[in-house]
Length: 147
Image 1 (spheres, rainbow, N blue to C red):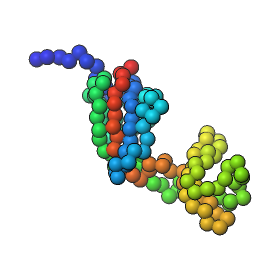
Image 2 (image 1 turned 30 degrees about the horizontal axis):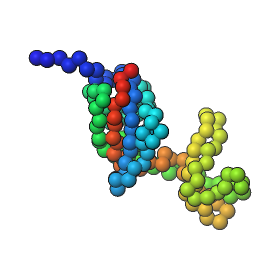
Image 3 (image 1 turned 90 degrees about the vertical axis):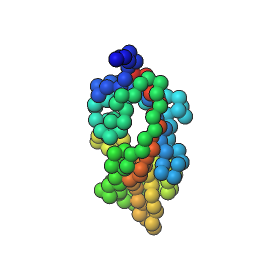
Image 4 (image 1 turned 120 degrees about the vertical axis):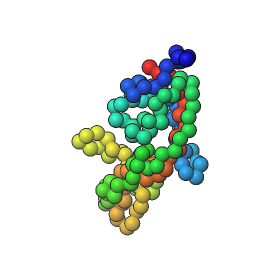
């Protein structure tokens, strides 16, 4: 019997990973490699879904892994309660109401980004769901380090 001396991710590990996300059509959604800044993940702190965490357990430093998660296990389903409407008069030349713009709104609990989805007359539809909510996402994980 041989025992590996290489560190593996455990349920209480802190890790540095490069994450690349792809949509179901194969297009890239985002990657930490763009700015060469790996993400720090603290396993077991509920910042990632249990399904995502389960994919990481047992990985070794330097290893890469690709896996696909349904919306409920990645960024969640789209929540209709996170879609709000504002009057177009609330926007300015500096912060224009334009479809596709992401606007940060100040809230008592901190800033909250919302994407302008539609402008209908004087009404602006703003979606506060995560931009990847409701989508199946393929993740490519490159384990940089186990801290």
